[in-house]
Every structure is written in C-alpha cells, then in structure tokens.
Image (tube, rainbow over all chains, first blue to last red; front, top):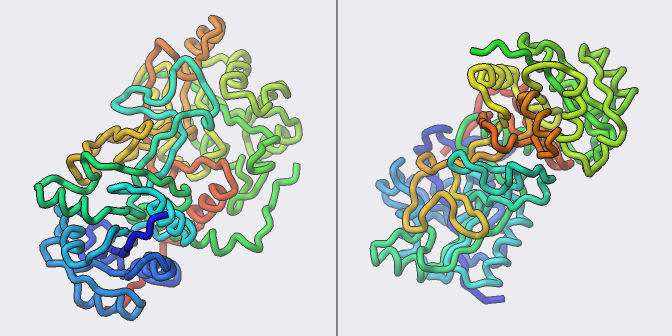
Amino acid sequence: MHDYKMVAMIPARLGSKRIPKKNLRYLGDKPLIQYPIDIALQIPDFESVWVNTESEALGKAIEKMGAKFHKRPEEFSADSCTNREFTYHFMCHHECDYVIMVNSTSPLLRLETAQRFVKFVKEHDYDVVLSTLSEKAESFYRGEPLNFDRKHKVNSQHLEPVELTVWALTAWKRETFMRLEKQDICPVFAPGGKIGTFSIPKDESSDLDTEEDWRVAEGALAARLMRENKEPRYLEI
Amino acid sequence: MHDYKMVAMIPARLGSKRIPKKNLRYLGDKPLIQYPIDIALQIPDFESVWVNTESEALGKAIEKMGAKFHKRPEEFSADSCTNREFTYHFMCHHECDYVIMVNSTSPLLRLETAQRFVKFVKEHDYDVVLSTLSEKAESFYRGEPLNFDRKHKVNSQHLEPVELTVWALTAWKRETFMRLEKQDICPVFAPGGKIGTFSIPKDESSDLDTEEDWRVAEGALAARLMRENKEPRYLEI
C-alpha cells in the first residue's frame, strides 16, 4: 500500500440545467450536496475535503457541513465546461498525490464502497481510476453484437461484461494531470498513462441527470431505509 | 404496418433461486406475476395472453387474473434451461406470426412502452426484436476503451451508445424460430436473420435478479406513486 497524500474534491455548481438547483435540493432528509460530504468526511485517508463551486453562498453552506470551500472562477461553471477545467484549477491550488473526485450526482454511493475505492487507489499506481458499472448483458455496439455470438444463448453470468463509467468516484494523479494539461493534452483519461477501473455495485450507480433519475434515487433510498423490518408477502396459490 | 398475429407469452417458474418464489411475491400492491399480465391484457394487438409455467397451482392463480395457462413440462423449468427450450415448446402449441415475451422480471415497464414496442414490431419484418437500454457513458470492453478516445473528454450526450439487452420484451418470429430449432441451431438471436433492438427508458429497465434489485424496484415504484403532489424542498443559502 502506498502512502499517498489524497485530497477529496466535490464539484458543485448552482446552475444545473436538467434538475435546477440540484445540489441544494433535498433528497430524503438532506440536500444532495451533503451526501458526498458526509461520506468523504468519514474517510481518514483524505487529508482534506473540498467543495469546488463558483457560489459564495453555497461555499458558506457547505462549511457548516464540515467541508472546505474551493472557489472556482465563474467561467468554469458554464454548461460547456467539463471536469477538465475545474479540476485543473483545483489542482493548481492544492498540492497532493491524488485528487479524489466524489460526485454529488451519485448519492446512493455507500461509505464502504468509497473506502474500497480509496484502498484500490493506494494499492496501485494508476494515473487515473474511474468507477464503473460492470454489466453482464448481451450488448450491441454500432448495431453489432459486442460480447455475444448470435449462434449461442448462454446464461448472462458467463458473458464478458461491458464496463460503463459512472462518475461517482474518480482518482487523478495530480502530477500526471498537471503535466498533460501543460502540454495542452486533455488529462481526464490520462492518455499514455495507466488507467484503472473500479466496479461499484449497481444499486449505488445512479447518476442524477434528469427528474426521473431523481425520483428513482429517492425511491431507492426510501427502500434502503424501509427494508430492515419488512417481511416479504406472497400470493397464496 | 403489418397485420401480424401476435401472442403474448409470460414465462414464470416457481423455483427461482436468487429471489425465492419471486413471481408470487408482492411488489407494492400486487404479486410480481401480475405486472406483465396487467400490461399484456391492455394491448389489443395480442390475440391472447399466456403464462408459461410448470406449476398447476400458479396456472390456476393467473387464470383468475385474466391470463391463460400454458403448461410447460417440468424439465424446462430447470436452472440450466434458457428461454430457448420453453419458447419452442410454447410455439409448438400456439400458431401465430410473432410470440411476444413479456417478462415479470421487469415490473417497471410502462404500458405505453410495451405499446410502442408492439408498434415497432408491426412496422418491420424482424426475425427477433430485443428490448435494450441505451447507455451513453464512456465504456470499456476487455479493459480497452470502446466508445471514447482517451485523448478527448466530450459530453456524454455525444458518445456513441452501448445497447444492453434487457429481457423486458422480446419478439420472435415464430416461423424463423421453429425452422432454426428444427435445424438444431439456437434460434434465440436468429442467426442469419434480421435482429432489431428497441430502446426502453432507463427507469423501466430494472431486471429483478437479486434481493437488492427487488428493493430498488420497490423504491422506484413507490417513488412513481408519491411523486405527483410533492414539491421539491431546497436548502436555503
């Protein structure tokens, strides 16, 4: 295990389009932005936990939740911006070995999974680690079967999985990211470097993009809470 | 639009392993098996709606719900069996142009989506149509980037999707399926024939395999019901 210096970064902008004011909105008993904060603060490997936002008001609010406020310039919160811009700005101000991005858009992420992710990063030497959802289903790409042969039907457990990136958790090696950026190369997937994937459980993999996603996440959270003392009921036949 | 004769087939076995007695278990206010029945019975294009099961007792119960009982031989309900065996047996007893399989394991499917699927089948001449979930996320296959270039980060809307088969709905042209089976060729994906994919909304694409899936579906259903008259709440900043 490496003894990396790790810093948690939680991106949050106010101007979300498809779900307005997403980060402030209550999901169950707390606002969305509080989910990644509560998780990150429980991970001792993080030397510090920052919310990366353009909003002074949000910055004040998250400080009350125990996180620190990294103010990004207004222009890095435009719709056209990707994590490339605001992550680079963050790295310029925070010296460390790895920046771990914890995203508010995956509020179903469990602490235990985030801890396993951090352990995975520490056990390796990747330039970037992405969290993924590993799906074993007959898949098509550009209209053609990808991981199955039309001549055979096998049980899905035996299919080669497709791994879909979920932006719940991302680890970037700061040195690599900054070096590539300075060479004007997009550093998000660390081209030329080592990329790792870390599979997270399906029920933690929601990505809140639309109102419908929001409702599904709300339901899944409710289901988690209610499940303990509920016995299944069956139709009598 | 073709005027196909279509028959709905709902597979249901009693001996499900990972979620015991899945089809009898109540999800919300009705047993799982009733979800596809209620949907199929509302689609006038279906000449008849059959539950394909080995269980006499379940057969009686589903008749009360308005479906017909197709008894499959016990041996086609083994764990090792795939839809190939029980679908062929069903087709031998039901003359039609298409068998449309509606699966109880996707209870979040909406009537409207099933109707659109049926319309899609009627507008074409496929040997098989699969329902899929279209995912626009940076994807890996066998450890390699599939639909993205590590040198660029683009917004996910611009990625080429991967289509994952969800067994919510499947249409098989009976003539093709039976011909291939008689030639000892696995007919599930109609090799040599025309295969179509029909993308269904993400919030309808659950596939109940595990207890965790069950709980997520339960939550999603609850969320659908509760959403109407609930105003979002926001953190004040």
